Image (cartoon, rainbow, N blue to C red):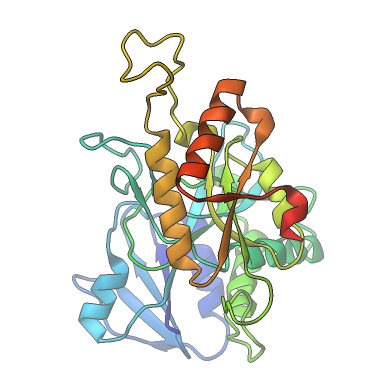
Length: 317
């Protein structure tokens, strides 16, 4: 497996973890990815550094393959995290802008209706990150959390973001950068131990959580994911499920029709998750308290129509 790690020099929360990782043993300089992107190699891992927005530089996996002939198996992006709360945080999440309609312009990369394949490491690495952050004294100052699926850039292989937040003071924190570097070092098996989070449907548990509903930080889904051996696909927050209240809609195709792009979001997230976990059992996990009655009914009926199974928390154990 060749892993592509992407960092940008324009963001301290991106380049600092990359620099800390590259300070560890075994790295050699690699080829320049046109036009001017530096690369470094260690075993089956490649680190590339550009100087542009981390969410706008599309198709880096395909561009690497074209330039080098190597096949990329997964992509990991390093980035800053911003939040209204300004709370210090280390986050992990899948990417995509599933809810946007054709013609709409995604504010942070990607393309309307698109979902990247979620990297199977998201769940195992989230749990490992939590342990590492605690061991290095970053908790409780830093919150260790998943985030819902959002933003770009466009990729073609299983993808995840690792982020440090949420203000410039914390983006520059060397201890946070070091923990992120250790996460990649251990998680990819660069130190000689077995890598963490390699998907294999033939061994171990095969159930994969597809989160539907709730806030951006997916608290109810995260409660399930914190258990060992839970795999994580896409996580759709409420804003990725735009639903038009039938009582407020003047014209509808049918009496019970609920407009909005929520169906597209669910379908795209399920298909991408299924493709990322071949042989896996994808179970939709609903944050029931985040929905009104009519929303829950519509979503449940749509899941049944699409033959998407629903799982309760105990179904994942």
